[in-house]
Amino acid sequence: MDWNEKGFIAEAAALRGQPAPSWLEDEPFLAPGEDFYLGAFWELSTCRAMGMSIGPIPWDKVVDYARFAGLDYDNLGLFVMVIRAMDSVYLEWLSKKAENK
Image (cartoon, rainbow, N blue to C red; front, side):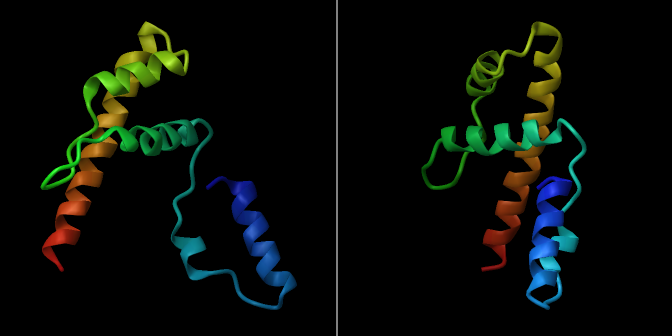
């Protein structure tokens, strides 16, 4: 969520005489360009193998997405690294969440 969206939500709450939702303060601030990675991650999450458990995003799908998005070779490695890191954290979070059930 970018700064403008946060401002809109806070302003809408204020117009209703209500405090901003607590989750709004916990939402991380995204620097310019980071929304690209977040959007790509959620789109790529639809490519996961499903079975007894959820699998990682396939490497070829990450590369295909990068090409579709028009990333050049110099930015491809960084894109793959960022998506892989996000995926690793997400899968770890899902695993811990499943353990707590």
